[in-house]
Length: 291
Ligand SMILES: Nc1ncnc2c1ncn2[C@@H]1O[C@H](COP(=O)(O)O)[C@@H](OP(=O)(O)O)[C@H]1O
Ligand SMILES: [Mg+2]
Image 1 (cartoon, helix red, strand yellow):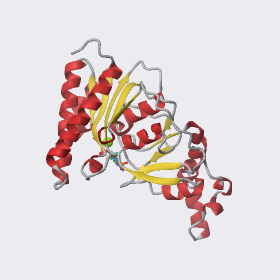
Image 2: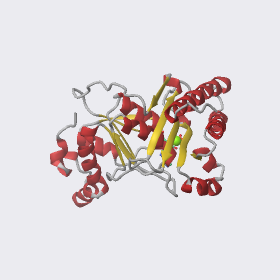
Image 3: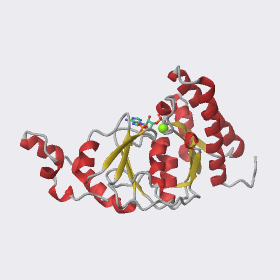
Image 4: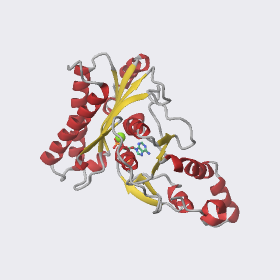
């Protein structure tokens, strides 16, 4: 244990090293047996992160996707709910993409939650490793976002489980949908300006978004639930099924569009007309394309 290593430095080192392990596992196994590759990747990254956190921060609690899957959640949750500091980790986010040859949209998430933090999410340090993109983003970095206001808004969404309303919402605001794997990779793409927003709904857990949300908000981006309420971490129930991460100037228009879909305005109009409503017939004022 290095007593001088700060929490952000530890998060960065762990995300980077777990990423190297995952690249090694991927190379060693190949892609012929995706199920075995996924299991080997999950296990290698999880074991490494768990061991290093126990060694370097023995007093802290840990919430990890792999612990929950291995059904140790009951004992583990008891510790983390009274702890002052909890590491929320997703050893391999975008497991599906990790198992597909040539894809780089998968990530390692390492975040630290602190009870006395001043922010609503209480995440004080984090790193998102993108091993196949050869980069690690952290709460200490301020990547320059290029000005993209001259092109259509790019809206990242799950390539395998996008929210049902998203195609219609994107058309309504004139956005281009960009299918991508991994919550971490999608939020990282918002951080670097490759896309302008990420919307998800329908299911997710705290570990899927904690580290990337911490990085995104540290760089000045908007992050919230899709109803605009605060994202909360280290809750008794780790389900956190939806989120919006975007440029701050897009938060208002996108939350308004989400509200129309969530409140049923769009669905009700379609029902009343008996046809599939065009975006213009539903909310004429929203036809103005976002930039
Ligand atoms: N409907 C849903 N229910 C539960 N988890 C979901 C989900 N949709 C997405 N996720 C999780 O969110 C992460 C990003 O998903 P996606 O690539 O589809 O955007 C994945 O994490 P893992 O890869 O760690 O399992 C995935 O399992
Ligand atoms: Mg995940």
